[in-house]
Length: 111
Image (cartoon, rainbow, N blue to C red; front, side):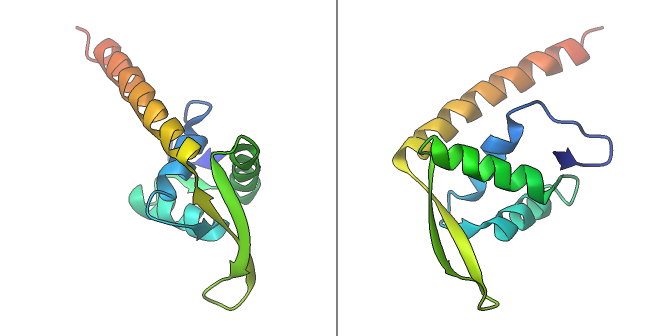
C-alpha cells in the first residue's frame, strides 16, 4: 500500500491522504502521489496499484468525481475533483484521525 522507511499506516489512511491532496483542485493520479510524497518529505510513497484502487473506491462512494483531460505532458489523464460529500468525509476523517493519533500518543508517552 504505502511505503516508507519503517512506516506501516493504519488501514484507511490512504483515503484521507488522497482526499486532502484534492482540496486545492483537481489532480490526476500521478500528481496525487507526488503531492503526498512531497508533503511527507518522501517518507510515504503511494504505489500505483493502491492509489488507483483508492481513487476508484472513493469515486464509487461519491467523494470524488473523475473527468478525462490532458496532463502537463499532453497525455490523456483522469483528473479527480473533490465533491461536497468528499469534503464532508475529509472533515470527519480528519477529526477521527486526530482523536486516534492523540490516543496513541497518550499510550506511547505513558511512564
